[in-house]
Image (tube, rainbow, N blue to C red; front, side):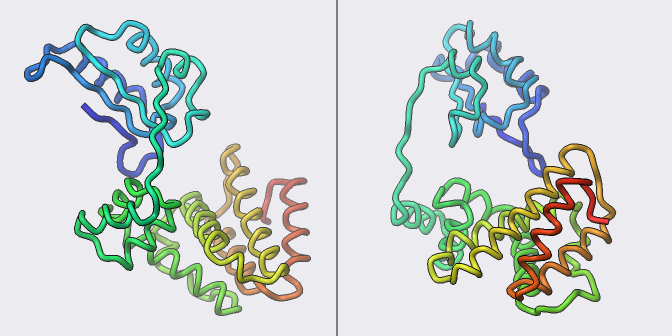
Length: 254
């Protein structure tokens, strides 16, 4: 049995772990051993992690549990202390690309997906086969259009209206990170500073939203549009710094 975060969610919940524990109590039909794999185990909620502890301490007879994660440090100490650690080497870029080509994908889309997911082939494959792929690509195209147009948007892009504000911000944050990773070496110091300040603004708004404070969607759209229209201008850095200070003081965009 394999469990992972469900479509549209970023966590593994306690109900999924309870279902997995019930599976582990069943008698195996083939091979004599039951296997449970928790993919990206660092995404388990605290309650889900606590629910799994007893099974890790005293696994049922003839069973094996595998927890995979790209960052072991994100697992709770109580989980780590009950597991045996195996570090699997990351494939090279060429190995990842060859494997994805064998899975039937085109070279140009593989290159883009591997850049987006820092050359992790499984995450790239999951994205390319996801129904959200075209939505993400449309969203990133709209961000590029806002930055390159140097104009305040009069009409909100359709891809923005389809998302909750938090999803929009996460999408922009990820897009900025990809751009910085790919292109920073060719930028001037001033350009790199602008991109990093834009990332800091988006990240700060996400933190504020995470604390329970919300912004009206139209206010958020107007703010992102304004910052995009100023991006690269002498005024951008000054306004970005002023906005960050205002967010620190009052947690509001207006």
